[in-house]
Amino acid sequence: MPIVLVKILLLILVISLGRASAQEAPPNVVYDSEPQVEVPNSRYFSVAFIDKAKRLVFINAGEAHGINKGDRVCILDQTRVKIGCFRIRIVNKTSAAFKPSKKRMPKINSGMVARFAEDEEQLDEDFEDNKTSFIEMGLVLSPLLPHTFNQVLYTDEDGSLESPQWVKGEPVKTNFTQAYLGTQVQFSASFGYATGFIARSFTPISVDAEISASSPDLVAIHKYSVVGFGAPLLVRWVYGSGNTQLILSEGLQWDMSYLRYRFYTKNGTEDEALVVKHFSLLNTISLKAEVGASFKVGQFSRINTTLGLIVPVSKFGAVQSTEFAGTAPSGDSSKQKAELADALGHKKSAVGVDILLSFGLGF
Image 1 (cartoon, one colour):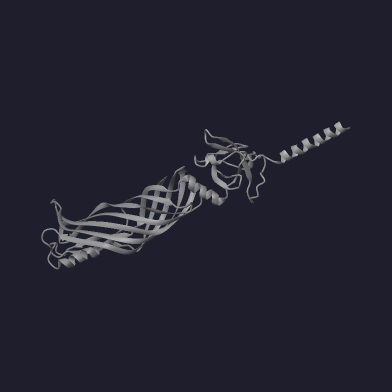
Image 2 (cartoon, one colour):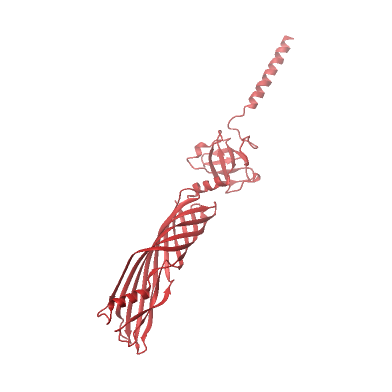
């Protein structure tokens, strides 16, 4: 009897120790179902395997669990502190893998909890992984410019060029080629600034016109050329994540315009004779607001398009000069210079509109 009792006691002790060890799960367990982590409104998995050679981390969930390539999962350590959220690169029916940075890779161990990323986490991690600061280059189309000028009409009743008159003609609004080179810097996933440099070149035009009915062989030739520069400094708000983003910007823009005008006459087959030359330099500061969209075309590149409204509010540094070639015409030359400047009307416009199409390369 004593031997039987001893055997029974030994059996009870073995069973008790087995139950105790079964209740103590190892810290790096790979869960086949949802771990018991009390974070609401999320689905949970775990890190199943780590391939250190390829720097890939596999979780025990895949397409069957609703995970698709491009989704993000967040990894929690044993104390439920988030290590980071990562984009899924490889996925099959029952497993998926992501590639963490070299800095975060050592912090991830098998058995850690994985869960779907929330919307804000998705946005923050897109910002971190996609390098949303860019060098940007593109073309600018401007239906309305912040600076305007007019073509001028020249008349002289007797055709002798002794009493010239310049009259305001049609305003010039187009014919500009504009290039943009700039940078976008993000302080966070949704906030940053943009600045850059706009170069404008006006395709030179030459307009021939009759001076007076009394001298049909005498032709007036008007030549115009303009170059300009601009520099926006805008605060940017970015909405959305992934392939398409909405961009809202507002700030200031500096613009400079240099107008060069030449007036020639030509009689029959004779060479052109310079009569007067004029230049005008104008600087403005404008308020600017933009709305646009950004489309991802690569891991670190995007195509951006924006529509901008420009409202010039101040001008400064205006310089004008008018010179007559040879002998000045009779009459008040200062008045004639003022009439020419007024006819050209080189000034800030009431409003400008531009359309930017650019390519951005992340850094």
